[in-house]
Image (cartoon, rainbow, N blue to C red; front, side, top):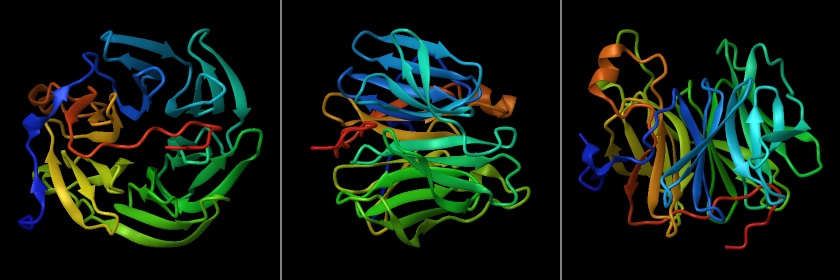
Length: 313
């Protein structure tokens, strides 16, 4: 039973934003200069760009997984791929290596990535055997080395920052925990870590109808609240800066992966979703699975951070 103070939405609040489905959509980012939404299909090995005004979907295919992306101030997009960090030029479909992977790509790959307000690209990894917890978090600055910033993670997700930049959020999806790190905004150094929110583990044989899901990708709005996609939980949660549950948004699909704010007023919440390896009966009942969904929200988000740029608004 939800607290009376918790706002609850409806699955009908959502609509299909992009008519083409991905296998596992991830890392949506709103490119304000282009008024377009970029997002990845990790197992599909594709980068997509959706232009709402033109109703146009552009797609670039690669020979390995692309997990997350960010606009770059020097032009193009920074891509976190299994085989390293790359600058990608959509106009020529060419890419330039920034740094090779700091791991064995046979067992690990980049996952959730996002830029902070100082233009640093933070990206975690996913350790595919899942045990032990050998994934990590890295930070890339323009022209600098790829620095290992945190470890002891299994599936790194949920990156975001508080409005003052003094708290970095991230999650370990397998552990069902969202963490908050004290952060020095100027240097990016991480300090003490605390549990921001945690969720019950999925029990063997548990019916998905009774399972709340595990924290995947996230976004922070203009009030400093943290929106998180609950994978297999068929819902998106909005948490206060203190970690209090403020609202629950049920979904028409079982597996949301990451929200982001977009549109000219940043009041469209886009949400990538997954259909990869889902039961046939579930997919038949949930035809929106794999699509980017959207809904209008009352509180806007913030402009997406760019790799190599200082955020000024």
